[in-house]
Image (cartoon, rainbow, N blue to C red; front, side):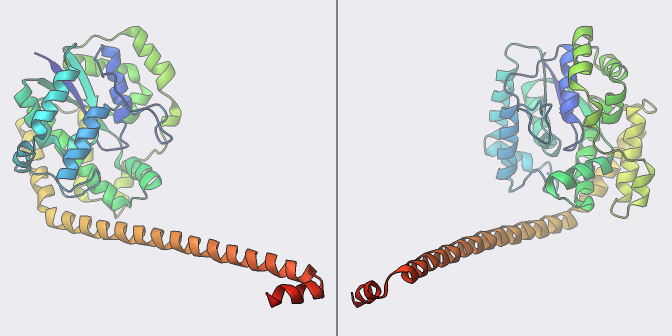
Amino acid sequence: MTKLFVILGMHRSGTSVLTRCLQIFGIDLGDNLMHGMRDNPKGYWEDLDIAALNIEVLSSLKCYWDTLSPMEPHQVETLRDLGFIGRALEILAQKTARTDRFGFKDPRTAKLLPFWKEVFKQGGYETHYLLALRHPLSVCSSLKKRDSFETGKSCLLWLEHAINGLAAMTQENGIVVDYDQLLRSPETEARRIARQFDLVIDPSDLENFKQEFLEPSLRHAVHEDADLVNDPAVPPLLVEVYALLRDLAEDRLELGSDALMETQRRWRKEYLQLKPWLIYGDQVGYRLKQMAQSLSEYEQNEDELTRQVAEKDRIIQKLTSKLERMPLHRLKKWLSH
């Protein structure tokens, strides 16, 4: 049976670093990965085919990666009718044709987890989950810089990705990996992952991972746990979820307990109760985007008008200068025409 290693986590949570880490266990990441960009120069390690499918799936649901309203299980049937489950199975079949261990990440997967879990079930895959955990305010700082998101919105997105990821891991095999801890002690975290999934570490690739990929500069923002309580934009539920995930990342809790499963179900229910407000937030956000687009178009039109006025002034000035230099008898003759 083919094993899938699925990286979950909120955008800007260290999912790229964790995905690259899979290579030290000999896990195949495919050969169609997204290249690095300015906001992630080390590379995204994101399968472009899976990412493209996720974008199309979200679009069919009239959603984006930053839509606050969560996906619900009944929407899986809609996606099945649209042929997306079949397409996802074809993609995974291609990716796993020559390997029995394939890993991938796309942060949108956490949002679309009800869809992907059905895909994994129909494909008969043995699925393992790795949840990348990063301090929520560090994520908020990164999204503020990259996307101009307010803290409240980023916190709600973080919550959805975290609760979905925890639900997946309590039902199947999984592990929480703290991003900052992975940067500080890659060997320790590699051994945790190896023990959890019965993997073997390649010492040379681990060294390459440490020397060529990990850098202290990857930590652009560092926050303390107390910062969450002191920030009025942070929901109390997020503080609770983050504390438990930290305990899991530091092996103070185990995933298999009935109490933990009941807790994650309660959190999921609490989050879904927010759906009317999340929908309203999406509507407000959409209107703000429309206003910003209209303003941009107005500014572009204003710039074009300014350019045309400047060109007209330039022509008048040039003509005036020419007339001023023209002898009087030639000027009278020119005007008579």
